[in-house]
Image 1: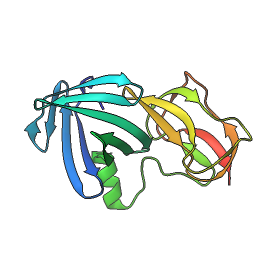
Image 2: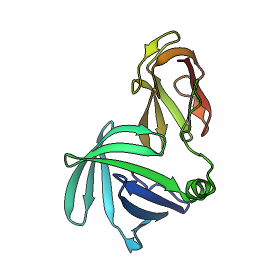
Image 3: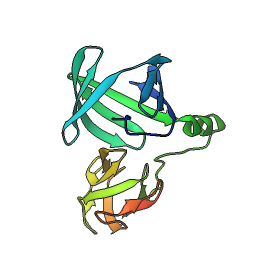
Image 4: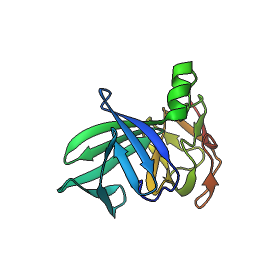
Length: 175
C-alpha cells in the first residue's frame, strides 16, 4: 500500500479486524495517521510481499487477498483484515446505499479502476467461492479478484492489458 505516489489528497478510514479504526490522510508525499505525521518506506519484494520500514522498525507484509475494499494480510505473521473506505463510501454507508464491490448474483464487478494483468479462468469453467478469477493492478497493487460464490463462468468481459473502471462488469457467471 504505497501511497507516496499519490499527488491528490485522499482521506480514508480503515477498520482493522472489525474493531480498530484508523484515519489516513494522504496528501502528496505527506501521510497522516490519526492526525499525526507518519514517515515510512514501503519496499515491494515480490508480488503481494512488502517490507515496511516505520519508526525505526522493519515489518514484513504479505497480502493474502483483496476483495473490494477489504484486504487480508499478514504483518509479521499476524493476520489482519483491513477495510478501507473513502469519504464518499462512508457517506453512502450512512445513507444506506451500497458502494464498492457489491455483487449481483451473476456478475463480478471491478472494485476499483485499474488494469487487468491476468485472467485465470475460462468460459464454462466451474469455480468455487474464493477461487482466483483474475488479477487487477490498481494503485500499484496487484489485487486478486476471487469468486463470490460457487458457479460456472459464463462470459469473461475483459482481457489482460485492458483498463477497467470501478463497477465495470469483469466476469459473468451462473450459479
